[in-house]
Image (tube, rainbow, N blue to C red):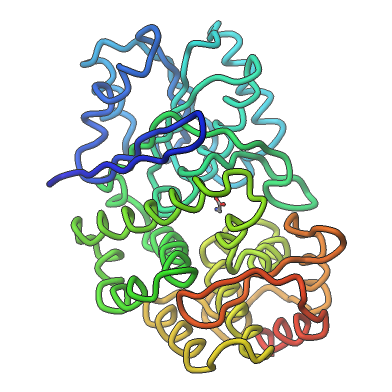
Length: 373
Ligand code: GLY
């Protein structure tokens, strides 16, 4: 089978996620039934436009959908108020109305920005996610988190706005640089570490084939992550509880990203990889997790070539001067802070994540210090 479908079932809203090969060529036929009138706007970035846009545009044309295309700059800096404002003005200029739907065609940056624009344009219009990176296909395109960054932190301004359809064409991964694939792979491992130790063992066997490009293994891995996410999002759409588990590695990771200035020196998934190792180290330090599980996770990430510490590696991250104190201060600004306490995702083993606000500041500082020494 070239592609498979799963459904995200929420109260009052459900949508399909299609994963597999050749989906860009079917996009027009899959999108047409969702449109009140046969027109839409594709919003993408320069890199995706260069490699993939023609396939999507031909597919819409074949399905007799008329469209405009907006091409934004590539990179994290696009998740800004400035770009959001420009995009909203362009949509107004195109006289889109509330029945129209727009298409987010790209990685996490495009998905988050376009989703946010869709959530506030005329108080909310529908949108379709066509994610083109592994990271977006396994995580950010599903579940309706949208937003932009501010100097104080990532995704601090945003909304929950669920898409109407997600099309994850794994062919788009073929033109992705290896470093981007690895960054997405960290989020794949995240799903295994949170609740699925069997998936972790499967990744130990098969993970490298996700990077080298085996289509069946890629499809299987993306579906497994999306199934896990669909269950969590259905239970806790607005992150009042269990959804926060999906932030495993992110409190540490966001601190590193902030110190790296949200630059190419550290990709999101790379930060999450180091952050997940730190979450295991903290859990071991607190006596909550067997040390051998932490070792297994570190070894798996290292084998696949993801960074697992800050200093003394040949990753660009090692060239950034970081102090434990500055990193620690970032964790205090983390948005998962509630009632003055930062909630950490800890683990009692591989596949056994839990939330804890009962973490000593001194332990967190020490974990940062260890990753630097
Ligand atoms: N990326 C975590 C979430 O969607 O909740």
